[in-house]
Amino acid sequence: MFKKLKRAALGASVPHEKATAAMQTVKMPVPGKVVLPMQQHIGEPCTPVVKKGDTVLVGTLVGKANGAVSANIYSGVSGTVSAIETVRASSGAMVPAVVITPDGNQTVDSAVKAPVVTDKASFLAAVQDCGLVGLGGAGFPTAVKLNVPSGVDTVVINAAECEPYLAADTREMLENGDSILAGIRAVMKYLAIKNCVVGIENNKPECIETMTRLLKAEAGVTVKTLPSRYPQGAEKVLIEKTTGREVPQGGLPSDVGVVVLNVTTVSVIGKFLATGMPLTTKRVTVAGDAVQNPQNVEVIIGTPANEVLAFCGLKQDVPVAKLISGGPMMGVALPDFEHPVVKQTNGLLALSAKAAAKPDMGPCIRCGRCIDACPLGLAPVQIAGAFNKKDVEALNKLCVDLCMMCGTCSYVCPAKRPVTQVMSLAKNFAKKEAQK
Image 1 (cartoon, helix red, strand yellow):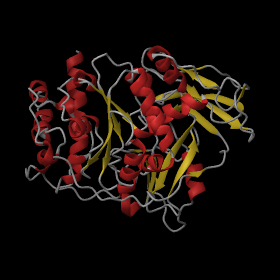
Image 2 (tube, rainbow, N blue to C red; image 1 turned 135 degrees about the horizontal axis):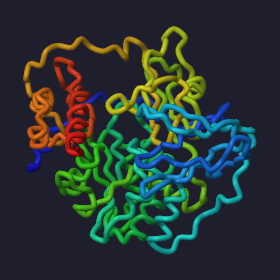
Image 3 (cartoon, rainbow, N blue to C red; image 1 turned 135 degrees about the vertical axis):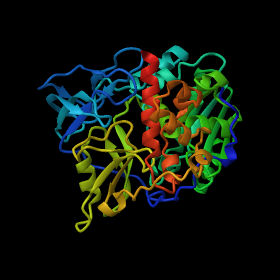
Image 4 (tube, rainbow, N blue to C red; image 1 turned 30 degrees about the vertical axis):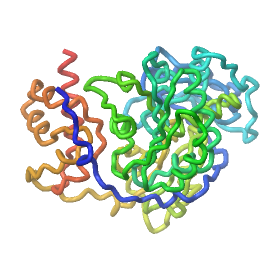
């Protein structure tokens, strides 16, 4: 049975590496090509609705959502579809992709117009039409998340941005407060939610001041200052820290009356309701010791990573040994520099061989630091032992299914063991055994 956690003792103190936090977002020019994988979300891949040779415009639908859990994909450029090909997603899966050659005109599709929203059904339809997914990195279709039961009384806005390097959400708060406010108002109005809590880590005082000033007159809306401790932005941790409620094992936030939205996600809702322009661009923090000019860049979704890196510049004497999409804790190493920016991309970290080098691994000394640090109170040492024995019953008793692969256990391990990877293997093993 999942027990109440001693939250104060959990998590890790990661370096506050936010060199681009004070840098205004820079808009990147139209790229030489755009590659739009049809899987940019949790759920079913989209079906391409264009073919080679078709002309597309900014905001043209190119990938139609399939099934109950999916999200439309739109072109961020005007131009010509040059190919429908198969590409490798960051997950390793092979998925279809629409490749577009831009014409440089950026002509907007006439179908782009502000939606008419009058109730919950039309609001959810608008969010679906936006193609919006969780922009904090999870990629869950937002229209599905917002289809909440009537018992939900609180929306929690995740503005923690606890990963090192990443500053995309920080810049959203400092640059687009009006759209954040519009999005919060719409969510509360159409979902009949009375309360909203915006959670921001205390290492972002300018964001706290800006959001507090912006939201002070809004009924039911508060800004909550959170300790700077990773992974403060993890959904279950954030809910407990902002509301005092704890999501039960196997449960959803809605089970405790909460829905969680990333701060940039709710801002895009505000923008879409005002303009009708679907999700076609993404702010990306480009950083790492191999980058010449680290900055926050507004990138057209589908832009290859190498074009983004060329725009920011790479140090000539520092070859890139690893390119990470996301932050250093939960980010994914990309297979090549051609990999495109997708909806979930909030960072590109170009690291040298020195920065990317794996530390020497030693034997487990059973110090218990991984247990002390786990944000969900799990016991990685015991889980590893049960996994080595292929003991499914023990893994289930140890609640391995709760692991969110946040990387905290590996970060605090003095022996530099791949604890997180073992946790992932154990979780997947237990899941597969349960499906037999």
